[in-house]
Length: 94
Image 1 (tube, rainbow, N blue to C red):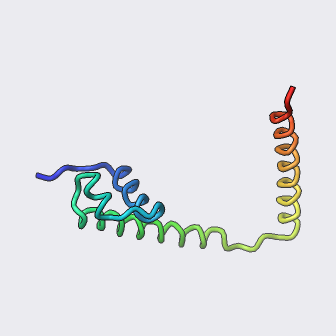
Image 2: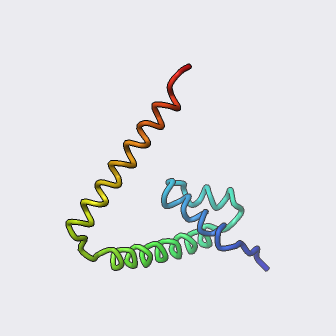
């Protein structure tokens, strides 16, 4: 009977191929699994990622009102200013 790997292990292996550009054959050899097994994991990862992206697109496709945009911009500017000041304090030599 074959070895069983948990979901996180499978998704991590698939990410290494898809996002980091690792070669499936080399990675499969490294992980001591077959190339077809790794390809199955990659296909499952791609399907999952596509369905998550579709969900995100649907849930964020509502229009933002001008007032909301202005508040978001104001908050982000304020946050950037705080970060700038913090960086200055942290990088200032005594």
